[in-house]
Image 1: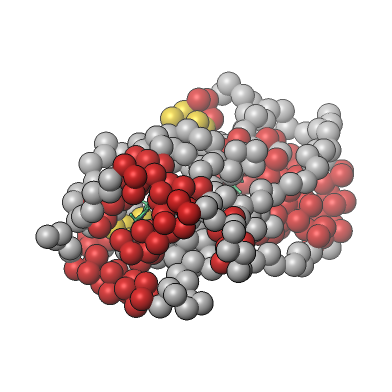
Image 2: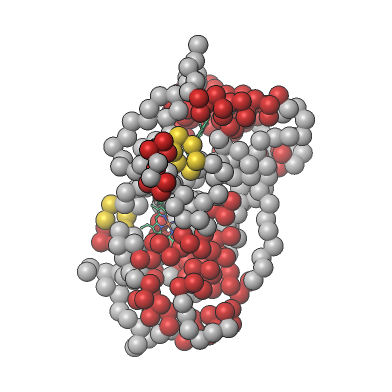
Length: 332
Ligand code: HEC
Ligand code: HEC
C-alpha cells in the first residue's frame, strides 16, 4: 500500500474525477492559445531590452543570458551565473509561457511579469546594475528615447515603462502547436502509442493534480516532497520565504511542463539532470509510486510531446552607445 499525506490525498481527490472523465472531451491539460499582440511597437521595444546587455553593470549580461530563447528560455545550468561569475542560488526557470503562471519566481514573490522584470537588473548577483544606471544608459541613446516616446508618449524613460515593455515581449513567448496540443485538438495521429500510454499513466498516477491547465503547471504552489522528504543542499525555503508561514516551507510554484525536453536540468536546485531522473523522483516523493523503466520511458515520451513551436523572430539590432553613455564595468 502507498501512504499518502493529506496534501496528496486532496490532490488525488481533485485528480480522479478528471481521470474518470478523460474519455470525454474534458482533459486536465488544455492547448496553448496565442493571444493577438496588442501593441506591436511596445513588444519590439521590449524585445530589444530583453536582449540588451547594457541593462547590466558589466554590459555583458542580458535577460537572454540566463533565459536563452535559443535554448527553451533557460541557461541549461543547475544554477545561473551572474555578475562576476557569481554562482546563482537557484535554477533559472523558462520564460516561455511564463505569462500563464499564477505568479513569478519559484516562490511566487513577484505578482506578474512586469513586477518580475525589475528584479534581475538591480540584483547584485545577477545583472548587478541599478535602475538609475540602467535608465541613464537607455536615456543616453537617442534611438531608445525616440522608440520609447513612440510607445509611451514621453521623453523620460522610466523603470515602469522599461519593465512594461519587457513584460509585453515576454507575453508573446508562447509555444503553441506541440504534438500533444494537436492531439488535444483532435488529430489522433499526432501522438505515438508510447506517448499516449505515457499521458494515460501521467493522468492515472495523479501527476495532473499539480501539473494541469494550459501550461501543465504554474497554477498552484505545492510541496516538494509530499510522500517522502526531498533531500537537497539548496537553501531555498520556497513559499515560506514570502508568507513567513512555516507551513509553506518547501512549497514551490509547480513548474510548467511545456517544453520540458529543452529546459534541463530540473527542479529548483537543478539536481535532476534528465527527464528520466525527474519523473522517477516525482513518482516516488510526490505520489509514492515507483515506475518501471518502461513506464518511466512512456511518461518521458509524453513529456517530450509537450514541446511546442518556439518563438522565432529576427535578432533585434540594438542601437549603439555613444560618448555620453555610461561605460560598462565588467570587472568591478
Ligand atoms: C543571472 C541570470 C539571470 C538573468 C540575467 C535574468 N534572470 Fe530571470 N531568472 C533567473 C533565475 C535564477 C530565476 C529564478 C529565481 C527565483 O525563483 O528565485 C529567474 C526568474 C525569472 C522569471 C520567473 C519565471 C517563473 O517561472 O517563475 C522570469 C519571467 C524572468 N526571470 C525573466 C527575466 C528577465 C525579463 C530578465 C532581464 C531583465 C531576467 N530574467 C534576467 C536568472 C536570471
Ligand atoms: C503534489 C504536486 C505534484 C505532483 C503530484 C507532481 N508534481 Fe511534478 N512538480 C511539482 C513541483 C512543486 C515541482 C517543482 C519542485 C522543485 O523544483 O522543488 C515539480 C517539478 C516537476 C518536474 C521538473 C520541471 C522543471 O522544470 O524543473 C517534472 C518533469 C515533473 N514535476 C513531472 C511530474 C510527473 C511526471 C509527475 C507524476 C509522476 C509529477 N510531476 C507529479 C509538483 C507535483
